[in-house]
Image 1 (tube, rainbow, N blue to C red):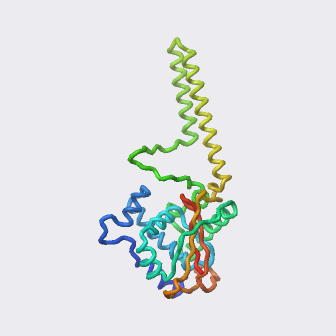
Image 2 (image 1 turned 90 degrees about the vertical axis):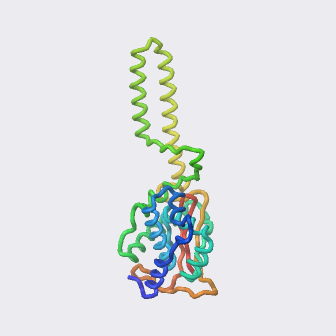
Image 3 (image 1 turned 30 degrees about the vertical axis):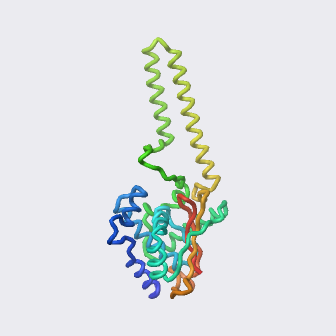
Length: 275
């Protein structure tokens, strides 16, 4: 249950518009294009981004965004006037910054815990579970973060086959090769080709497994880590502007907005803290 002050802040955040009506290429359209989303999903992400910002303002503990929300946050930070003046100064009455995390396993565990706590605070504040297609579970959130920017004008994107697909492909090739062997007099050539192909496929299969395990050990997977480049955030009252003080939405929440929030994204770790 929100306090009157929290409800007023939440209404201000709801009323805040990220899309400039006079812009030919709006924020939501850019966010959709850069992430390969349709506009319906993008607008839902923006709505959840506003909820994340609200949680940053009222939480007394760590708040971690999902990757989709972190992408919205990263993009909004590039709209400097909209973010720093329209949102932080004129709407929130505080600044919310992105700062580097220290990295390492202890930080990864901390962010994983923060993400769990964020889900609980979300439920306490909004009386519903966060949507799973925008706020996935911890394992997906912290495992599927091996991203890179790709110029689609220069490269094709082909989905990486799962291991079961590799095995099925191997089986089909073995069958085809066996049929060819039966119909050909040059059995040695076909056998050499088959052995080489199967060997390379097996090596690729095991290499994929080792890479997955390495990412897990390095803290990039299994819901316990961040990628190597980290970022965090903190939020503080602008000394020249009115600040917000209230109670957390969680049961027994104390007074004040002092908080620390951080988490992981495709480019590292991110979050917010107020003090």
